Length: 92
Image (tube, rainbow, N blue to C red; front, top):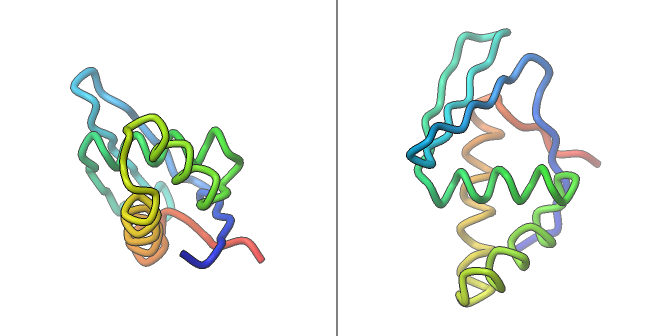
């Protein structure tokens, strides 16, 4: 994974539901994204690690007892998707 830091775009609201799913809504574009529980955990980990993708993925790999490379790849896929959807921006 290329080490990235991301930040949610202005006007993006995140709601986590009791079933563990996440709904992202952009007030600027009215775009909506509903995420499964794994993506919800990734979103929360990103928030807890100030948007540092590598640190968030490593924490989840440890918690899940998963292969770190797989979790990093999944995190990168999610981040790329959310950036493309207008919910996140990569910080330089």
